[in-house]
Image 1 (cartoon, rainbow, N blue to C red):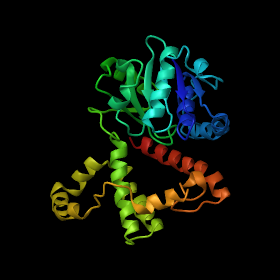
Image 2: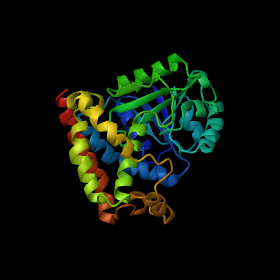
Image 3: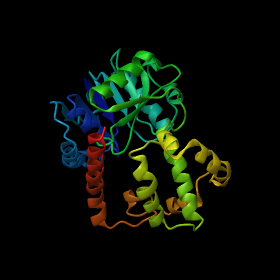
Length: 304
């Protein structure tokens, strides 16, 4: 299949490279020439991670056409990966409409905007679907598939089968909702983590240690629902009966995060956020974390 990826931010390069490795002819585009050059520069690192996972090259291709029209023409699937702004996405969909073929599927890699909301702007609602990859997309094998109110069953099936054909893991949601499943669980965890640090209960470094070597270590082997069985539903009921009332339930963004954002400290992308990063760290961290994720995935797959 020819697949077009529109938007080459943090996710686009890995998505495009992974699909090309699976044998698809992928075209990728971004309105920013700098983003295109950065994406090209990331390909050796991404390729090394895919080699580390033992993912054989099935003979696909990855090219970077100069125009949106050349990127989309002839594609059976177009994946939109532009910023999380409904207006930006809507404008792109208007541009894509005249360029797409009569049977082309349009998928959004939105991290949480409801598919039904975006579907109102899509050229053909029946062929619009959510395809939510997890970062880094060339390493994490799970992809959420979300149909909107008007998405046809056939469209959901096309995306589910495409994911399976790449030896990845599709999770088809039964209902469209903000944040889908992965980010709803993640943001519930992050809300409590931020609150504990903000209250002075624990340092950011120690909070990460607790999650990495406690919760995260277990959850990489035993999922939350099976963890309930492992711990015992009676134990969960007893602890939840008093602890749930104590958990953070704020519905705004923590001042700790808002204040750093206002200062322009956005995290790794600006060299500092909750932590500071040297130029050397910024250069080495993506490769180091990718290597660790590859190693963990190989171990988990060997035990399946």
